[in-house]
Length: 149
Image (cartoon, rainbow, N blue to C red; front, side, top):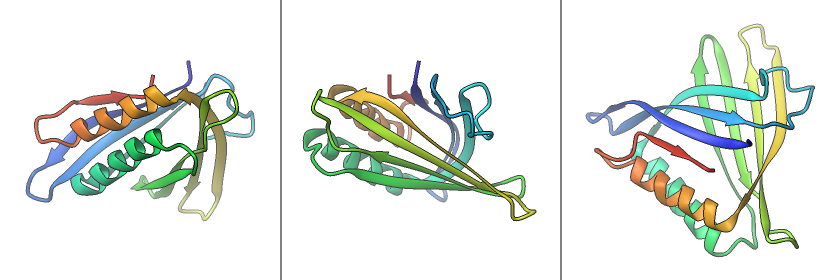
């Protein structure tokens, strides 16, 4: 199943930071996405608690008015690579479904860049729930994991 799963790996209360692992699974991934291994991609990173709360609120707002797209980026500097993960929630289509465009770019220390783009389909109710759970995820004793489906 196509899904987005975010797992809290640690948090730093002094710096109000959340460390996370994000797993993207896509059963129909493009064969050119060599950074996606067997349809699953992992990324580790960190983000300020308030920044993640703002993203959660924007996702909830999008689910209530899905006419314009909403996008955000997460970055990571892991093992000498600069990774950029971009999620774009596209406007509702004529069937009442939402597509989330996932873009990943990894720039390695050799300046080689690998890129991948794929889409995950969803529904408004699931996106609203994802936003609400993501907001709960940011709380100090909140959820440890959030998934789209």
